[in-house]
Length: 240
Image 1 (tube, rainbow, N blue to C red):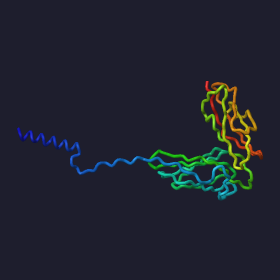
Image 2: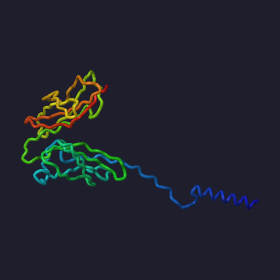
Image 3: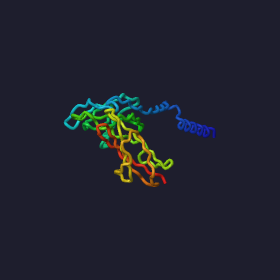
Image 4: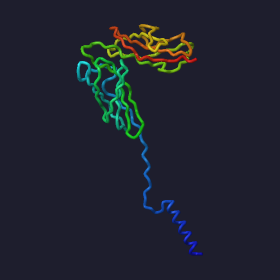
């Protein structure tokens, strides 16, 4: 009986050591180091709201433009995003270094930003957005940058305050001339009804809007030489 009890005890101890790891000589797992999200890049060139004259001519239509930014911490790669502000076409260029080049149409306005990314993470950081005009052949004066819609935010539902919806936008011009604005608004997705013209301020109050209706609007910017540019068409819905 004593031998049998001793055998049971030995089996119990063996099982206990197996479950607890025993003296296996293994090492404790090393805790994973927390991933630090990438930092946003600082843009350097082309300069913001300036005429870009540093492009290298590719042909009569295109110039190759060099983009640069300061390297951002905890970043493995960058997406350079360039948007033609006249056509709305977005082009994306990837690189592992803080810089890239792109062949762009001359005489067009552009905006650009940089997205900092990590290889094994979905974390991203987005830089500021800068604008520039790419120099055109023989051009000495440039149309304003297309106005940037501020409010109402595109596609939002709006509760009129006192029956009023305030439209707001931001304009800029590479020639630093005074700008005037024409506002078009109606229920057509290609608005053609002029509701205000030659504004020198960057907001306008709209009244007599119908509840539950979606309105579309755009801003036409004009400089002293009557060069013009159209903003992207924006929309908002009047809440019921």
